[in-house]
Structure formats: structure tokens, C-alpha cells
Image (tube, rainbow, N blue to C red):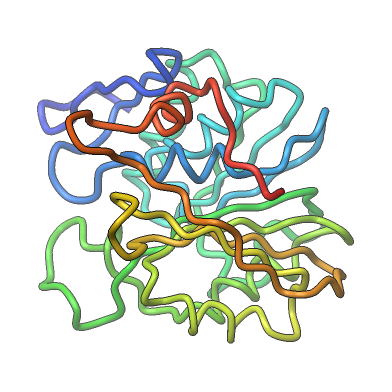
Length: 245
């Protein structure tokens, strides 16, 4: 992809990840890095992201886990091209594959592939929540959460985790979508400040697990007088992980 004046070049993980992304529309930020940091560690494995966008979470996951081979699926051609460009920019083309397509609408996409873990940051808005725009795909999905969960459940090997980040208000719908498909659900709320309600949830579920539901202690991202808490800053720099203990 030829660099465009409409793109910016941004740094994540303390400069270890460089990302070319659209100047307007959906832009990767803290959510992408938190999501990548929440994936359970494995020495090696095949990992899937659906809705990879420009590749922020996908590439962060690959950088944080050098033994992984990562596949990102993105249905919008321009974003898929950016993700491939970013993989090359970060020297990860040998371990990161970007597939253009829609695995929710096309169950045959990635036929024969089985993954050891998966993750996603689905669009937070349903149809009608935002006006039409050239890049509304990063914010609006015509698929409900059940469609997203099904797309992963059918492509995960037994015992494989799925990790998702979403708005806190979407938690009931997300739990409903997971019911009967993936088990052992664990929820980690994310708060802006310790005295405020959670605004995000990170959810992990496991294929084939019958473990009981667990609501974990919230993680506060900011504190008065500083941009991020010490732990949140370490998370964003890739020096800490969001754990499921």
C-alpha cells in the first residue's frame, strides 16, 4: 500500500510497534493494546483476530508473543492493505498473515484452519447508532455479538480461549452470545478511575470449558495527577500483562 497523506504513523508498546493508520475514522488506541495484553501466554500457537483493521492488536500480540503465528481477517480492502503494510513495517510478515474477507458472512473462509486462541475488538455500535461515513465500518457492525462469537467458536480448537473487549453496557448481550458456545467465562472490568463505574470489559471464554463464571477485580487505568496508573503504563509499554488470576 502506498503511504497516503490521509494516514498517520503512530507508535505503541514503547515504540516497538509502528502503525500506519487512517487519520480520520476508527483509530487504534488503548483498547487494542489492552486486548493484546489480555491473551493468555503460550510458547507457540496459531492465533486469530477477526476485524483486524490496520493491525494494531494483531501486531501487538505478535510482538508480545514471539512464538505465535497470527492471522488477521479484515473485510475492508484498504484496512487489510494497511495491516499488511504494517506487518512489513514491523518485520512481522513471516509470522503475521492478513486475509481479506468476512468470516461471519462466509463460513467457508479459513476452511480447515483451527486456532489455539482468538481475540477481537468488535465495533461498539449497532446499525443506526452513528451516521454514514467512509470509515463507519470501524464503529458500526450489522452483525450482533452472537454472529461474532459463532465466527470464532467454529474455528477454535478444544481448550482455546477467546478474548474480547467491549463497552461495559454490552456485557449482558456478550454473555448471552457466549452461552452454550464457549464456557469458563471470566470478566475483567476496566475503570477510568478507581471511584468511577467500569466503561469497558475484557471477557475471556474457553471452548469446551465448564468452569464457573468469574467476575474479577476491576482494573483502574488512570489516577489523579497522572495520565495512567503505574500498571496501566506498563501494560501500554508491553512490560506487563492483564492476567486472569
